[in-house]
Image (cartoon, rainbow, N blue to C red; front, side):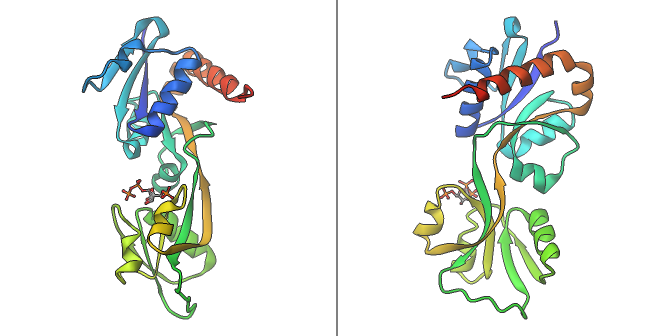
Length: 211
Ligand code: PRP
């Protein structure tokens, strides 16, 4: 029997995702043995899990190296991969927001300098508002940009708000709510439909149970 290839986002979110899949009836005992291995199989449950960088999950799934995976809505909006989004897992909840220094006063007549990891989301957000912007694409520690005068504002993920608070920044606008999504490769969804539908159904049922 062919195994279902499942790309899990490495890190805290991935641990939660794995716990959900295991409770939903797709356990994998070997994945809990501490090691540096990246791939784990359980023939009995017909699954093969592998850990990938969270921002790479959609690439594995889009290209069929993984049949299904879990990716943040932020990544899906930014890269628009050609995949099916099957289920909102309701975890990894946060929001994308515009933030700035507390004393920032916007001048709508001027081009706004925006630092972000999410250039495409930012582009369409400000296009819809008809605002002229200059995007400064960064790869991390976005909060530094307005502090050092590299940008006027940032568009970034806000979870607890602690990073903004501790750097004297404040949210100006919410852009979009974010959570983790179960995604599937389009061909896999067709050819492994029974097994994918089964994992989706079991996961959805588990999420609906009162906690
Ligand atoms: C994310 C995000 C913020 C922080 C928000 O950063 O870019 O910096 O988490 O979380 P908080 O509201 O709970 O403080 P991440 O840890 O992914 O690192 P990076 O963006 O700097 O790479």
